[in-house]
Amino acid sequence: MCCPSDRKERVPTIRELKSMCCSLYDDDMFTQMEWHVLQTLNWMVGHPTVTSFQQLAMSEVSCDPELEHMSWYLTEIALYHKEFISIRPSVMARSALALARCITGRQQPRYSEWAARYDPQVVLNLSNYLAQPSAALVRKYSSPHLSAVATTIEQFLQRQVLLAQQAATPEIHVQQVASPVDSHFMGPQTPQKACYMQQAPTGVLTPPITPDKDFNNADSYGMPQTHNTRMGACTPTPPSSAEHYQQQHMGYQQQQYVQHPQYAQ
Image (cartoon, rainbow, N blue to C red; front, side):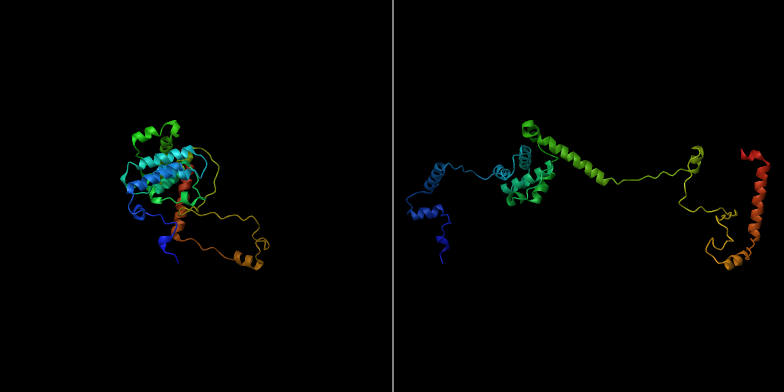
């Protein structure tokens, strides 16, 4: 089994290289030689930035200038707030692209594991600062050559406010009930079937309902003839003295109403 120090993948440090050369070269000389080798190979070496990671993520999809400009705008908004200083450039680039896709209505990538791994907390924090951007940024990203993404975000925020107001306001259904006085002045209307049972006033006799068929016919109601004979022999219970007096009193009032027509006007 080989020692971990013998692995070919291990990159030696400058201190180790210096000790291998018996300290014949200084530390800066190793760095200058490394730059010389990279320039000979036409390599471009730079520090990792948010823009470089955004370009790497955008290289996996088709060209979309509006989405790219939107992500630039969001990352520049983050420069004004200190809470984003500790965020890694790769995480910031992916989170800004995720929020830009949400605003512009693009679908989130599912085929790329690297571009799809964004931080939801960073996306939430960025969205909280959309309503208060710098005036210089708004002026810069309102130009047509940057897809006017500042105007797009303003319209997006207005739609979100309207949706929040509609969700907070409950729908009130007002049912109008016509009073008897209004229906008297509105003239004749089509009769409607009542959905409730009207209670008869006290002292007024309810007239009996005339059956459509012959009640004496036994076949009409599927009832034996003996039951009809027994029911016809039953005598009604006479009303009490109070009800009899009330009926006579109401009959007297109706008679007086007929004799004096001026009461009806």
